Amino acid sequence: MLNLILRNKYKLLSYSYFSKRIQDLGARFKFIKTIQIQNGAQHQQIQKDAQLEKIDTFLSFSAYQSKYATNNFAQESYVVGSLSTENWIRKVEIAHKIEGFKYDLCFIFNTKFKDDVKHALSLCMSYVMSEKKSSIYLCPKSTTKFDEIAIFCRNNFGIDILNHKQISIVKKFTKLTTIEAALKAKVIVGTRSTVLYQAGSLGIIVYPIDISKPYGKLSGNLTNLNLNINPSKKLFCEKIKELTTKKGRMKYIDDNFDVLEKLDETLRLKKLPSDNIIRSLQEI
Image: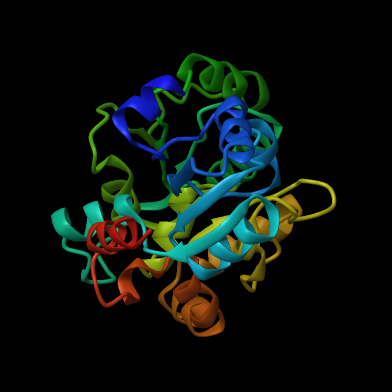
């Protein structure tokens, strides 16, 4: 506090999460303003885990997320777009031919291998094992414990994911790993994840799985997709078989276009997120 006063600096900016201690400090001393740039999709569990309660200004990547912030923990919120999506736009050719796919599925892991991720992976493995000509690309985060996943698949499906002709794994962690994997696959599957928001907004077929109770409470507007996000194994396999066809993908886009364009508004904003963030900070 003394350091802030001596330096005449009263605005605190974060691309991560402010600790509850900092939030309480800002709430107590009104001349201190906390500004958080969204670095991932917000939902009830994230809000609870990060103890998000008292943020002055939230810079969001979509109108849905902005509304969620103002209804739950932020005094005000503005849509600026996603910096990580901007990185994809700048470095990857987003406009690509919808053909020449190398994999049927791309599975996006979360950092922790929790029950919802295990369930979603089980659905994918059931499909791959039943469709012998199908393939899957496993895309972990840099902190994902892959030995835990390998043991799970060996115990539940009797397969070695590190040595299976239908299974490929991201072995190098680069800034573009996820989007490169997504562009190679017909369908991206995963649990609630910022990647699913971003990939869906880019026109890639995404299938979110959510087994939370009450049903779907953690996936935000991903739940508005015309999909059963808590399907039976049979229903999931039937839907994936449909989505891996050209006709099925076209129907998916037609049925979900309005939802997809709202997931991450970066592509539809007049200026890049970095420019929007700078302008917002100058105006605060």
